[in-house]
Amino acid sequence: MSDSKNVLTLPSGQIITINFTSETEYLNSLRAGDDVVLENAKFSFQPGTSQLLLLEECDPFGLWVVLFSIFHLYPKTSSVEVATVNSSLSSDIFTSGLIQANSDDRLLCLRSVFYQVHIPSKGPLSGFLLSNSSASSIPTFYVTDKNSAGSTVRHPLRPTHLHTERYARYIPSLQKLLEFHVLQKSDSADVDAFSEWMNNDRVAKFWGMKGAKDTVHVPYIESMEKDRHATQIIGTLDGERFLYTEIYYVLEDHLAPYTDGEVGPYDMGFHLLVGNENLRGPHIVRAWLTSIVHMLFLQDTRTRYVFLEPRADNSKLIGYLLKFGFTKLKEFDFPHKRAALMRIERTTFFEEIGPAL
Image (cartoon, rainbow, N blue to C red):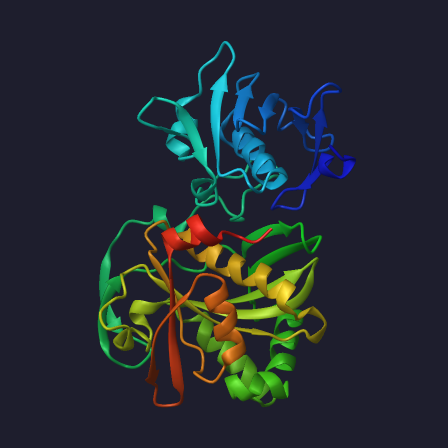
């Protein structure tokens, strides 16, 4: 096995080093730099049989990092069978959702399940979601108010924007760290990027928001900050801003009436643009598109569908969506545009697509 496989980058950006035995290609230990948060992470893995043997007891985060390493080093591995030596797995590991017992009482972790697990952070390390809570932990409490089209709608109370940092994932094919954070009016770099992008002719063709920063863009950002059904997100690659997306609950959005009653109380949608001309291209689309969908499904386990409604003549974006698991349900007329209704289902994403590596 080549030396290049000895180093991986966790979603939170830390480098982890994996040591291999001299006689085999089995993984046998793992640590994050000089930090000892993963002191109990010794294991062996046999790729041919997909068997993971934990040589020491580990907690849920330690096991998550071990499985993260396996699924990234061996992309064709669809499941891992877990066994232990002289110890049993803690109940916390089972309640985390990482491991399931099949009908033969074998303990398995499926790749499609692994990427759905929100694991709480440990010390400086974190999973894909950069907070220790998800929207799934919020009790369901229905309220009635006006949706974005002015109609009355009954929907679950939505969480406030408590966490600025939302999602991170190192993309091996790009060798860059992709991060999503909430756009902040107080962050001048966020606001400047948003305003610059909205004045880009290519972007303005679809968004129609050309104008001055102080009189057009800042008031728009302020109005969005008050809207609990939607959140403004900035995407960065290695810290460089390149993408803007608005993620929203479809039930309270003007899109809801056009879904023919197929929208659930926790289904999500998003609008997006790539404003940085230096960070465009199909190889980057694959990374950010699957990461946005991953973030939306990960932040609430009750989300079944993710929707988009691009302009019907935006053939490039529609082509990307079809390539990465979306279905085109129909075309329809908004008051301001003819749109294509695009949708992807949770199971389809995790079993057939998954976050791009």
